[in-house]
Image 1 (cartoon, rainbow, N blue to C red):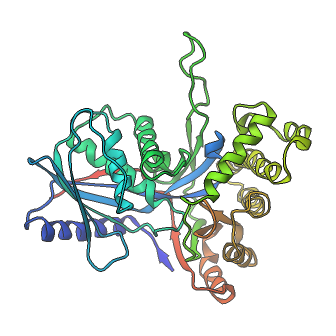
Image 2 (tube, rainbow, N blue to C red):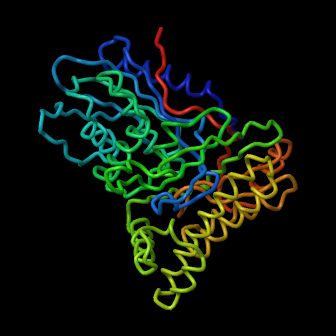
Image 3 (spheres, rainbow, N blue to C red):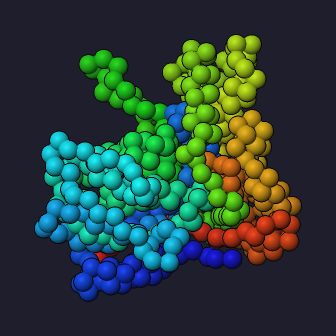
Length: 408
């Protein structure tokens, strides 16, 4: 079982710096940044329904090291792809009014999208190496980690006003327009705003204008830090090693079903609905769309209650809400899979486990388990005995969001 720590990121930075020197003429990079992945404790598929989510930033992340150059060429190398040799893409800095286009390789689209939507002014050319220790396809937001690390790198080349909400929104826009993934805002928010020792309750309601005197309603994209630093509890991430891919039809289909349900209920989003609203309109919805909405409305309520429980250190209630969340994701939203169900079931069989659930978009990836610190090794052994495949385990704690690293 791997216990993650900040030293893992330091080691990754050192290795990436070595790759940069080898590829780019033996010189040291001038800039080094990182941005974390995340695990969502509860609040799944609620962010694009303008609900609540409760993630924490991980001690695993994406690093970018590099330097500006004078020839208006952007040269990017990644070691994060599962290949023996680093992969490189090169393209010119887009001229004023010009546009980058998504294409192959797909990993570069996340970088291109952030460059395209970065609005602090014209960028110089640059060389950079990207590396990550976030498991790819594990539901721990390797993509947002890459986007936020890229934005943080660009800030060192051409500083912007440093507004964290704008930073997260630009990274989300990059994923929408270049990776063609209609994700919510959670992953980018936590990668930007994570804080050591805390989970982050995010209200994903989209700000809007309601007349000349109202600039922003309260509760719009607000965040609230929730302490999670009790040494008696730990967070265990278990990777099913079933790799999920969300850019296919399932994720957009779920999103369209939620929008359909909100429209039938006469609401701007499912955030505005409650169970009574849903039951009153049940006859107007297909059975499948009804169940999708039932999950989202219930999950928004569960997440608000879970944040209160965690604030009060009521881990028993928090764990119960985690299990309810998993059951709803499995039965109503139908984004779990047999492997995730196996992992959750096995974890819940051991005393000292408060709760366990799938985390991330689903169809594979990871589970997240809250448990007593003394039970971690017993839980790992039990899951290994019961699970039909080979799992990977990470004991982790909340980390800070994106940061700039000083190079000697």
